[in-house]
Image 1: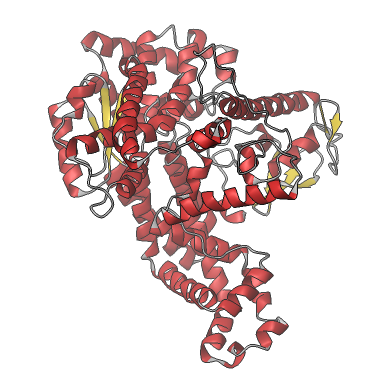
Image 2: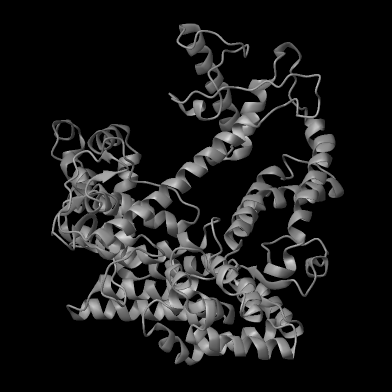
Length: 627
């Protein structure tokens, strides 16, 4: 998609945070990254960077020929070796993830492993799966007893089971994303393994709110204790939304272990954050995802965007409010929707514009169909108005401009909102790249383009410099070897950036153990700048883009231990409190006055379990990223 492309300082296209070496040997055609032109032979691979890499490795991989892929006869062998090594690494990671998923399901055993008198009941998961539930359980009938897998009775039973599970989701307003969770898979597998259906009894209301809740609280507390030993090494981020219970979490964790408190940007949190920073060595950090959402909100108020969104809403409301027209639209788009909900209102606006723009030709064609011409709408004033808008080139050009403005911001939101890796090491560069992408996308062909960029620049700078940008962002950017060693001049550029260096020095002064530790960190920075010792070895420099920044410092920073310790505590931080907000969304669903009358102490237990349980995946991924 052309709106997502940009060129960095080297003049070559590379997606945000991508370390794929394929982009070093091919470039998008006319900004379309699904069509990539080979640097060596000029062949255009239609299938994105993956198909280009298949083309460059001479259309074969481990003895297998890729189907319908033309091989490159001009690519050097060293390039082939680099790409094959990268592809093997990616394949290994995919296989490991799949293996862990299968192993997790196979290890579910309701009888446990301690009772030698009970034979383990293990389910053999078929290699080929036919339906969505087969990803979690082996084919079964309603009585959970094996029968012929292709029998009509068994198929009907499985269909009924799916219906009951769907009813549970629908009636209780449970997010469909829950079906992707590990706990959902384990629950299904455990039920399947219970070998006496006549005695099976699900937990009752009281079981869930008393006995099991207390047990899970103990298990979760024990699980958290495993991470406590790493608090001093990697530091702690306290994320908070609206919850207050009179407990000082900083004292509970230990002030020396807390590096930052991450909240949204409301005035009460700003004042509290300023007070905490004045009274301690802890940083207050506004949530990056919230700040960028505010940027999108500012963009949505621009006249061009506001008018385009109003027109797009009018078209989508007309289509979705009339069953016959909706049927025509879905028939024309082959089932693709033009309305897509998201977590925030501004993100939903972007997704809807994006979906509508992607289906613009199908929408235009819809009004030329026999079904449309035979309906009442071609003669109706509303129908005429909608047709006029959809056929207007100005409308679609304005929508394209809106997407060119909004896409880079949404890319940053996706980056900071991920639970896969700490984002502090990338946010500074992501914002700078976002500004560059917006400016490049808008171009400089006329006064309207230049005026639009000036408005965008003011919005981005006001939110970034005035609200979001903090010393920790600068320190993390400086200490990320991916950016510091990016080019021959990148380190000099960082050293001459006064604001960046001020942020780094502020963090060192605040987070150093004492004056001697601060002095040693400053001396170690000389080794980092000059690539002294292990930091300058070929292996260390070759890995700056392929392994996580924290892992890089752990692996190659042992000769500068003071700086290594400081880097680990900074680079492993998150920059958003959105995981906390998602947990509280779940908490809101669990506890409302209409639905729940749990007393305060039991609610506290549920709060602890819900919060920590929701953070498990975040903490696991963050810990693995750091290690």
